[in-house]
Length: 293
Ligand SMILES: NC(=O)c1ccc[n+]([C@@H]2O[C@H](COP(=O)([O-])OP(=O)(O)OC[C@H]3O[C@@H](n4cnc5c(N)ncnc54)[C@H](OP(=O)(O)O)[C@@H]3O)[C@@H](O)[C@H]2O)c1
Image (cartoon, rainbow, N blue to C red; front, side):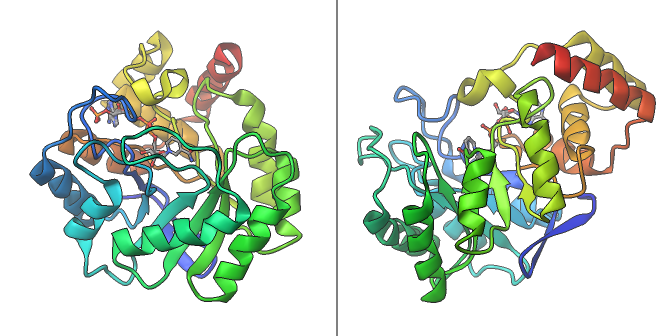
């Protein structure tokens, strides 16, 4: 039901995962006006995801609304954790308790962020930690610190997020990188195509975020394209499923982590792992990707 698998280091994940950013609130993530999501609904979606075969969940300590935290919801819904569940979190950014963004963490602050994730998730180690970068040309000092935390046993594997190819080079000189998480989707950042190829050649998973919302980002609600809708109709599928299937077709190392608070959307997203587009449909979507981008 969730397509084939990929390995993040020694951990095997199904290629359709789940992004928890949208769980703490209804509507746009990080919107101060957004209403906290119903707790039972959020917990139900997480349990359903795992029941459907999802074993890769993306989260962060800075995913929270006034009264809900993605990490706490994951802990409440899924602990004690199944052996095969891989929880990927990210460090670098952080927010005040009121939700305002703070400057990117210094290398010395990363241990505290890793420990915060451990406390919230109720774990003794984190499966994968992504260094989420913004505005840093050289990430070496940050990544060295994460490599130390890995040696100390707090983290099993390391990844990168929001990075350029030279950041991957810098990080790989320091420690193994199992995944790169960047903003990408059909018609969204086609300039990433080459980087996706580089990740594939090096055996690094490429994990796009905003694969469904694209340029609409956290706000969501992107206008659907006629071509995508037509292809979806031919398969009795939804446009979102076509977007996910196209993304997965970019390479065996490409994983998806669609976010949803809707159980029906969740089921569709998991089933998108089984949707096979024809070479002709893929070519039409590739052309759209390059034109839209
Ligand atoms: N590393 C980073 O910097 C970074 C940045 C942003 C996000 N992320 C991660 O990436 C994950 C994915 O990003 P995202 O959640 O922002 O965007 P996304 O997966 O591209 O799209 C989510 C949006 O699409 C809707 N949706 C989901 N499934 C659908 C379906 N089958 N049919 C129609 N609509 C559907 C959701 O609304 P409903 O709730 O109504 O389904 C939501 O509005 C996040 O959850 C987060 O874990 C990482």
